[in-house]
Every structure is written in C-alpha cells, then in structure tokens.
Image (cartoon, rainbow, N blue to C red):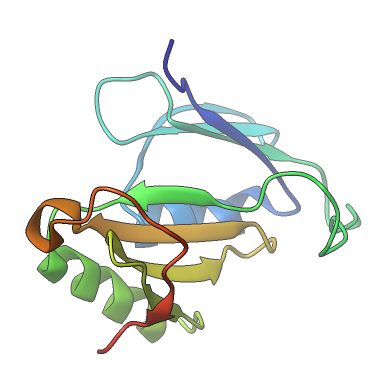
Length: 139
C-alpha cells in the first residue's frame, strides 16, 4: 500500500490553485468547472485534489483532530532555498526547523491548511531516527 493522494477542501479554487500550481509547482491534470481541480507532480492523475466549498466554509478549529499538514520533499538545499524565497516573495510567513533528520519549512496555504516543505538530511547527518529534535533552521 502507498499514499495515493491528498484531498483538500478550500474556499476559493483559483486562490488555492495559485498556491499549489504557481508556488509549489504542481501541474493541473483535470478541472471540473469551479468545483474540483486535480494536480500532479508527475505521472499520477493527481497527488492533490482541491475541492471548492465556497467563501463561507468554516475553518477547522486550530486544536481539533484532523490533518496537521501535508509535507512535500525536495531534493536539495538549493531547492528548499528557492521555494523559501518564492513563498516569502508571495507574502507567506515561513517557520524554518532543523529536525536533525530534515530541514523543514512550515507555512499555511491560503485556506489555513498546514504545509511542510522539507529536505531529508538523514544520510548526511548519520541520524536515521528523529528523536523529537526541533531547533531553529539557520538561514
């Protein structure tokens, strides 16, 4: 078994599309009017599905159960820096964390869904396990 895709409910489909397509680099594979958009990083029909609920859809409570974040892995530190700059230029606030096994950027998408963008550093650090490490990621 493997993870097939993530399905996110959003208020504004075009605004969410701008984030996932224009900032994170997914490509649109299918759009169903103004109700659904399917996006992919590669050969899958979709890695992310965006479903529009309308402008008045409520935001899930911050400390409720449910999805904490969707994580996207990049290949290099340069890729992480490039995305950090692109997201910052677009007005997103980022939090950088060094987990010992990864360098991670945390932010929210336009609907408040948590997003992590990270680079795996386990091999270069010789640390196969996380052990709860979280320190500020140096720029």
